[in-house]
Amino acid sequence: MFGRFMPMEGKFFELFNAHAEQVVAGGRELATLMSRLGDTLQTADEHAKVIDTIETRADHITHETVMLLHRTFITPFDRDSIHHLISNMDDILDMIQDVAESLVLYDIRSITPEARQLADICQSCCERVKSVVELLHNMEHAQTILKACREIDRLESDADRVMRSAISRLFREEPDMRQVIKLKSLYELLETVTDRCNDVANIIEGIVLENS
Image 1 (cartoon, one colour):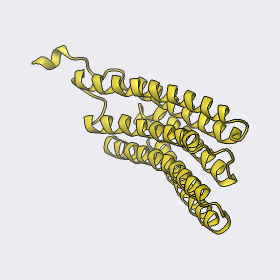
Image 2 (cartoon, one colour):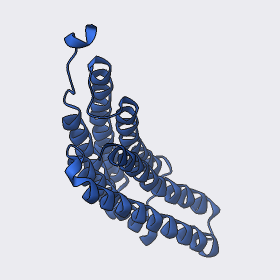
Image 3 (cartoon, rainbow, N blue to C red):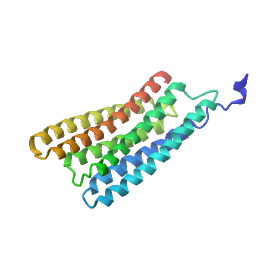
Image 4 (tube, helix red, strand yellow):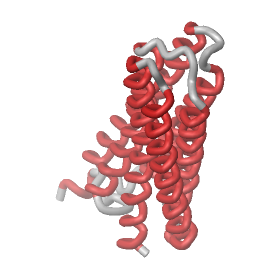
């Protein structure tokens, strides 16, 4: 009975797209931070603050999505899938924020080519998450969506290989144990960003398979 007074479907896809834009903004800001690291410590702090702002905007979108979910009678697909999707998208930005904060807290002033490569892979993953989310409103795009999800999985595997190679070289060549600890943690955080992107791809893949 009460269902007739509740909105049907709502603006979920608008919210997904808005959040995906923040994911891309965060990924790009992270890549820029990594490319400029070493200019000044203030530069790192400035980029970290921008990422904080992006993450806060994304949190608001996540909250709005969850509230809409509670107010909506008929949703475009499974309610749990909607909650998992927006929550896992938010996890991507949480990890990007962790990377930026770690750079400042650890006072890392120089960066390795592998760290920059990982940041670039993170950016690519974030951009592909956005491209997949933008297609989710229409299951006629199912095959294109699934192909893009596989591409995110491939990028995550690339990041894992880069991380393992970087850590191996770090232990072989870096004499300063403090630097070893800092950079190992940084590599792992960067790789985890791609893990979170792949989590989103897996959720979307499941949604597509259930609804197409």
